[in-house]
Length: 180
Image (cartoon, rainbow, N blue to C red):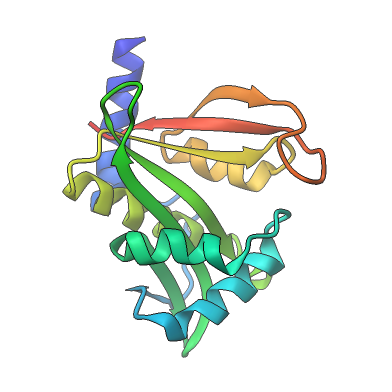
């Protein structure tokens, strides 16, 4: 198991450094930028509401973005936001590890399968690694095959299944990725 975890960690570090091949060879012409301020918030919220099944209040967005702006990346295409990732990094009290958490990831449905989601996750994981992150976790719907494929390709592993986790009664997986 340790060898598997170490191999996955090496893959994540390669992906974060941009040395690993993208899961999809097609690439969109987009720029990754860090969260620039409150003026980005409405577009982030619109994109998340369009793509995610779970509604979030403005306070949830502000909690993550204001506390960890260096872990919020935006994919911009011609001045339009086509993707975003919102994360945090803090000490996990149970394991004493510096743990990253992907709170939200969304890519405009018309821009999927072009490497945007992979680039956003790689950027966030790279920023976590630079800040000493040791692991990263997230939850995703059991039925979200695209997200599961994306995260698996980036080194995440299923850790736990949560029954009726979401407001729509959908089940979720907690996914785990070692960063070191």
